[in-house]
Length: 145
Image (tube, rainbow, N blue to C red; front, side, top):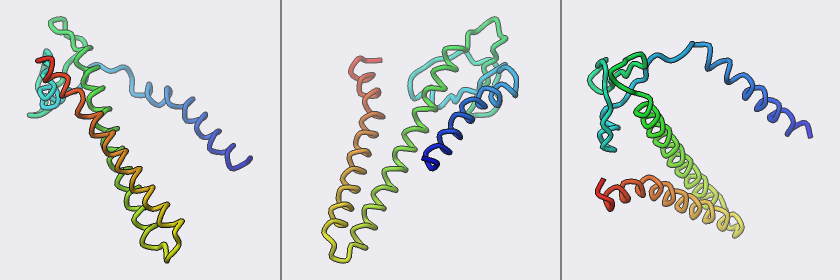
């Protein structure tokens, strides 16, 4: 009971502290848009000022352009890219763990089966992640967007 209670309390405290930590910096006045990522998705955004060669700042106070939608799309793209990288890394770790189980089985058939299942499940996860990342591009090409 104590082993499950401590992580649960930690998660609840972290969830309650998250808004305080996020709002400590104050309200956002601009967002940085990665021009290369937005061009990959053929999204045209009104850029206000250029800060570097790859990122451009879109100021919320600008009356000549509306940056909210571009910032939202940019955030979604970056979030899905991070999730994709996380799934890929997890899949690689699970495959390595499955190989470890097979190598250290020492004639134990259950360990070999467990290792094969780990590798099979990591490949399934890898295929699902690749399809989830490729399906939007395929749909855009089919629709001609």
